[in-house]
Image 1 (cartoon, rainbow over the protein chains, first blue to last red):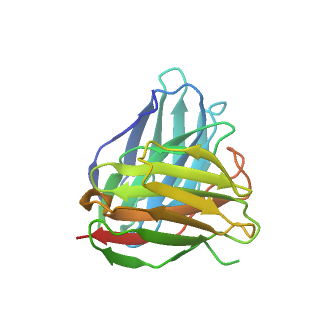
Image 2 (cartoon, rainbow over the protein chains, first blue to last red):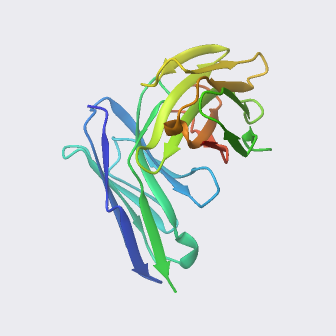
Length: 112
Length: 114
């Protein structure tokens, strides 16, 4: 019930391409869905987040698409750059708590 | 504003020992959460403290414990260390609990148990 399933596990994209990472959740009590970016040796950093009453949110080159009926959401990175190479985690959070349930992560490599 | 500070950055301990990790949240943040990160299990929630009270606890054995002080600083303790406790332990803080307050993570403490 608490799982968040993330795919793919790893992704290689050419510079300028679109990176797409998908997540599916089971717990319908989740009402906040953040994405975190983690570089080696660093902690995860909040990238962008969405609430289920919105189907899409865009911040710069990063877009979250949300499908509430399918219980799925995805991160799109437009014009991917080598500096975007990192591990990306999706997560779900139940209102009233600060407890995030994370996906297993996607290691993104953007080739120059 | 300074970020979340975790000390020490690296620790090497022997099986059976105990360890204490420290976390200083962002100034003004009252909620502190701890997560364990391993290659196999990913990021897993350990516990959350708010105003010195434990609000939530993850599915970890009683060897894992924590506390929060009146200045919001937090410590976690792991007793009787096992090889499987080797992980990156991450602390995160937020202004308050709930989904209106994003979590900000520190860079973690890398614990190696030999």
